[in-house]
Image (cartoon, rainbow, N blue to C red; front, top):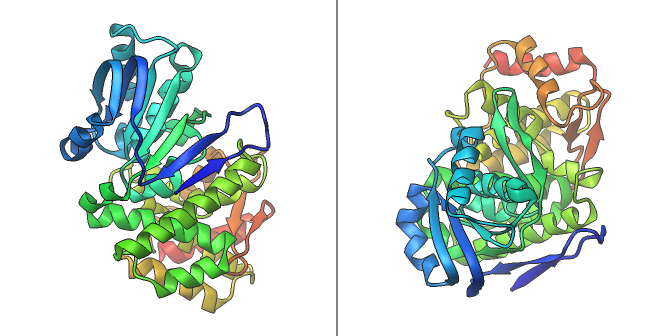
Length: 349
């Protein structure tokens, strides 16, 4: 199976997402695999059987969101310069969302751009991070505030890599799947309620469906000028949570799960989402042992951190909310006292 991303903006090159069909990667130049020690130890030997290049280098960076920073970028770039890479060279992102984001960013800035391929090894990166060309790194001000829209040449999604995934990492990916179902597809959400994602055949169907949903959105709006912003449902809250906890306490998908519940609490406070829909979403998140609450220590401080997020615009906060499962609304006119009331509910937990 495969999905072709056909961009409406023809200045961007189309590419293909392959499912369980890792093809031989043949390059008559230099190739670097960017990975981390965990993924390399589990899967690198298998990947090497699919690469035929003039010269091949392995670059490993430490595992974890807190290493998605400028220091790691410098380390990767120094390796590329030391090994005399050029614009015709290829980078392969082999890992989860952190590896994909940082490799794509390095590809976008190395000599003003070289090719890269995504081979995601976590559920979250397969259904979300590897698709759509968002690349970037974090800094002390927030998540992904430095980066570029830079599309890969191809994406290879291999479900076999998920067999070694820890429970928390698996659940983190489920959060991103639920995110897309809540905002775009009520039937998909109903299906998620009825299936068991620990069943391999069910999981493969759900991965394909989730990727197809995201691919359609990205093809319409590559640089998030409109509908692609809906994919940030739950993320406005999640990014503050990650920043406050120094990217150490929660995996990204876990923070998104909490952010979804916080967004739904805001939606309920505005009389948009029903109590029943809010509970259904929370129940599905909890089914996969995802967290749904967070203790807000200082509501004013939490509120001010919203303005560091990329989704704030002209000092206006933009929230992606779901008035009903399968539907979305973008709100940028919510009063501060309403938001603070919602944050107070999480301060009181």
